[in-house]
Structures are given as C-alpha cells and as structure tokens.
Image 1 (cartoon, one colour):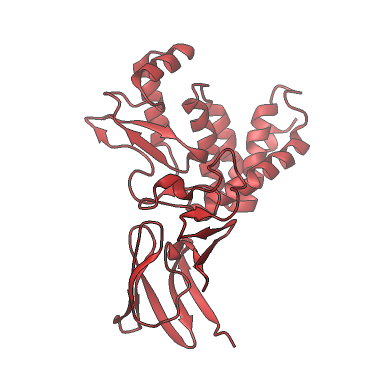
Image 2 (cartoon, helix red, strand yellow):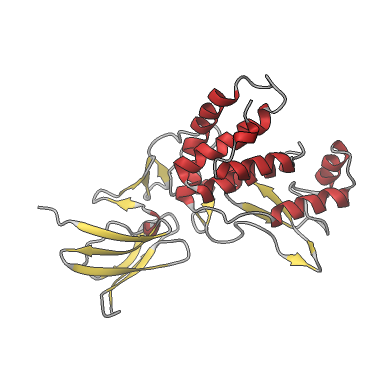
Length: 297
C-alpha cells in the first residue's frame, strides 16, 4: 500500500512534505529543483544534483521523493522517468515534452523551455518563464532607465537588452522612433511614458496566477460581453468590457491577479505601438472590486 504524503506550499511552491509521520523540508536551488532534504532537526538526509535538462547526476540518501527537478514548482517524477507538469508530460532523458503544446504554434511544439533549462521553468506545461535572470523591470541609472525591454505573454516576464539611453518597450531605438512617430510623440516623450507605465506595475503573480489568467480571461470576456453588448454598439462599450472583464477575472483568479492583468492589457498596447488608455486602466481597477455601475449601458 502506497504511503500517503502531505505537502506544504508557500506562494505555489512546495517547501516541505510529511510522509508516514516524518516531516522533510525541501532545500532548493534558484531554479526550484530540490537539491537537499532536511529532517526536523535541520540535518541533511538526502542530496541531489542534476544535468541541465533534469536527469539525476548524483544523489545520496534513500528517502522517497517525487518532486526533484524543478520539484518545488510541482514537477512530479514517476518511477519510469516521466515528469508530470500539469498540462503535459516531460521526459528529461530526451529533453522533450511527450505531447504537443496546447498553445502551439504560439509556443514551441515539444522543445523544453526554448532550450534554456538552466534559467527557465514551465510549471504549467504551457509556456516557459524565467526564474533566473531578468523577470521584470529594468535598472534605473540617473533617473532614466537605460535598457530596452520586450513584453512577453501576458507580461509574464520582461527580457532586458541594451538599447541606448532611453527605455522603450521594443527592441531598438529605431523601433522606438517608429512607435513615437506613429503616436505623434517625440522619442523622449514616448519612452518616458513607457517608463512611467512600467513603474505603475502592480506585483506580478506567480505561475499559478499567470496560468489562471490564461485559462479564464477568455471566459471573463465572454461573460462581460453578455452585459455590455455587441462590440462598439454604444459609446461606453469599451470601458464596460474592461470593468466587467476585470470583475469576473477577480472572481476566478483573485483581485491581485485581475489587477495585474488589467495593467498588462494597457502595457501590451503600448508595447505594440498601439497607444494605451489611462481611462481603460481606471476601468480595469474599478472592475477588480466590481464597481462597474457607472460603466453600464
């Protein structure tokens, strides 16, 4: 008969387990892989070292442990070498997913973490995100951000690249110039706008929150559409949709996640050189608390 185990988590990461009345605490590396097990006295009972794609390189001790490589993020290892990671199954020996990514072709079909296993995880089985290296924001030097960042899926993380003295959401100063011109702004004004918007970023949710946004944002928009009507059918339709989408998303995923998603909608618009709307963002914020009466048709 299999022995039952209970797990303790903080912010979606496993930190300890209790198996057969014995508690073990997880010691993890920056990637989230369990590299040591500790007993209740703090004594190391087991150790683990890994090759880049997750195969066990060396180990000591004999404790049963199903969460090893990226284990604190919920990668569950079975006896055959398969790792169950929510949406899919990963095989560390071949460094590939066993099944097609449900988000393909938006994501790589079966390649693990875009070939960057030493700095990224894919805790949903849908898309990788950085846990080591730049994840959001950029360093500020002399009051001006001196990096250029690219916003990725739902602002899940930001990759920073050197790009001159101004900060812009695209990859180069020439892109910044094109965006600025298209919006009728100077490059300096455009970049300051982007910088100010980034500084308003609420706390980013962890992978569970990001996954919730992906899974439920479409449903939240459909429910909002039932209230606000057909697209563009009345002057306040857009604000109505922003508010009620945030309201329903807050119900599905929590207020903090909905607030971040609302902020990120406008960030993505700015990042795509399509402008952004402070008024839309205010509607998003009202929606987190479902204060949407003033946006009704």
